[in-house]
Image 1 (cartoon, rainbow, N blue to C red):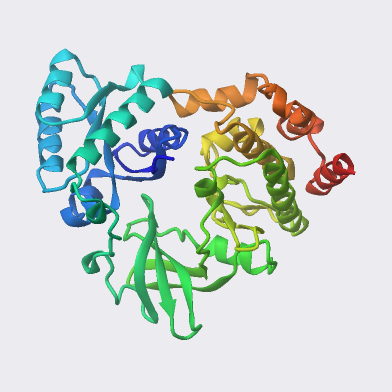
Image 2: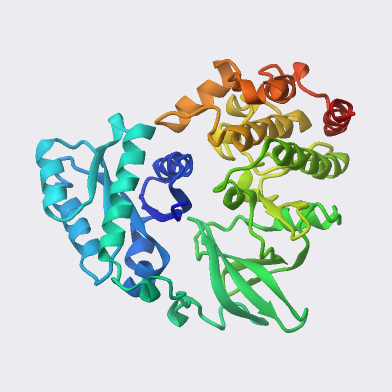
Length: 413
């Protein structure tokens, strides 16, 4: 099986960056996908960029006043030796923009308003071919592990923690593999980026998870502030997450086992009066035993006290996994998490998401009014279970995670 492509999306428009990230993550060839703005990209060491990513996807504006700046960006991005290929997703472009981008070395040029899954898949294949052509000819050179570069990992970023590797990055925070001498163990250390935003990002997660204390929920060891950066230290999972597991086929029986384990974890969370609100494969970690652990409670909502991070008119979460009521900005309950679990179940069975479109808003609208997809014949026996999870009307879904578990056990019996 071909190795997955590690992708960095560069976009100053946060909503467009999220849209591109979600669209890329739906592609079979895509592996880890990160998003950052141009300021963060320009500060990255070139050598680290070449080691960390196989492809750059740039959202570029080709309106008359921005065309030259977009051309210059492509040239700068491709200038360092070993730089990853660049795919341009263009706004306000024309034939001259396309020709100019390709002339400056871009692997592909994709007009944003015409972008679909097929075009994106073809572009990823071109990028993978270009990346391989630039690699060393000797197999032993290609397979040599890449060590993290020290300039990316400031050892004194957070006192008491030694940073060892970068696990992931987003617009708002970085997650590092770190060692804590006090705990005598490796931890996942999430550190916020410096920002003028004074609203704490991790405090709610620390409070919510601290009240759970269950093997099905991530352990959090430490939380604090240091020189303007918020940090939270939590359990590290060397086996990775369900998103990585989905890069390889999952059998029907294994898919059902995952649904059962996730449902048990949700039962714990819901019993404490919490709704996760961002259930998706990257937030489901795996233990060596195959058990699952839920992480990232940053936007979890306490049903008893009304606590949550969503402001009026602001949608939080991943569009591909949102329930219809979440897409419409309605009040949520535990059945919204069950809908997200249904989307994950469909993805495990079929290898694709049930609803895919070229914009986040189109995906959200499909959750609201598109029929639940019919499973293929070999999966048809799971259709009632899927419909009990993904019913548009939450009153027609399983009433709780416990009801879902009873249905699974009854079917097995």
